Image 1 (tube, rainbow, N blue to C red):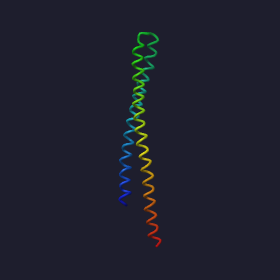
Image 2: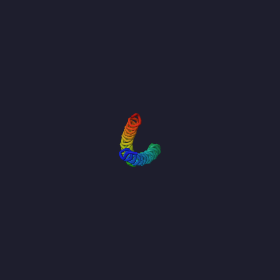
Image 3: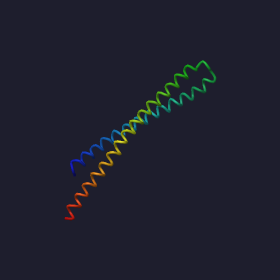
Image 4: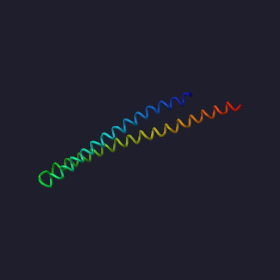
Length: 109
């Protein structure tokens, strides 16, 4: 195996791990956001009965928006890591093809 190909395979391995971690973080934060939305929904039912709870609703709404913002940042990170994976896939396929072409040229002679 060529040194160049081995290097790219190792890069792919690292990038895959980074992508998995980024995806898991994003999923965790999306679940937290969903929990915040459920609390907000529950609270909206209560606020109809007790209008004085509107300050608490504003707080919950802000927490929900912030949770979604944090989740989106993690999703963005995961997508960034995914782009590195795609780059590695292409590089490895190219290097494999390059090696195969060299091998075929040597064996035809």
